[in-house]
Image 1 (spheres, rainbow, N blue to C red):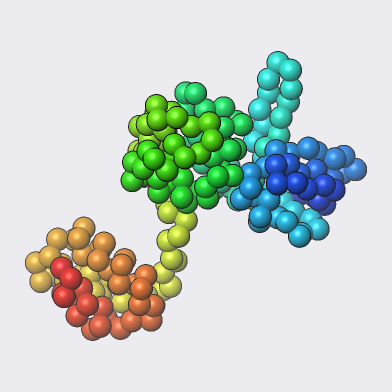
Image 2 (cartoon, rainbow, N blue to C red):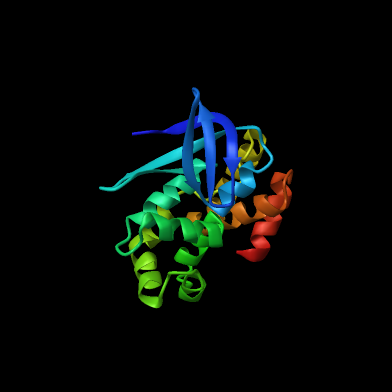
Length: 194
């Protein structure tokens, strides 16, 4: 129902924030990640998730939309409520949680308070495919010039007989570690590792 809130920080602790918007103070439950992101700021925009229970209407606030999306995925898993999901997002960064799920790192997930072996395995089983389809947040945006160089290198390597998929993966690695590389250098580096 609510998408985000834009307002002044009237109160802030590592577990919650009070945001004043339109002369009303909204009490939001937040993760440690969100606390770190907004601590020291006067005004903020937080993405919201509302939970309606018989005894309460709760609002959860997130500094990044990607963190809110991960929270929503986590609470979709049987046995994980909003408090546990918030505990997970306070114990690990969203990227660490995604990496643990993709790499099936049960021990890392088990290290979070309130998560046992069965719950950790259920999180991995339920979310591995869903998280694998999401774009990684640490992907570097390729500029138009890099894109042209990438396309030229890709077509040259495919014409040499290399499989398109493996060439694309290798080029991604090369561009990530060598920004501003020329076509010739890209092809030479790719030939060494393919």
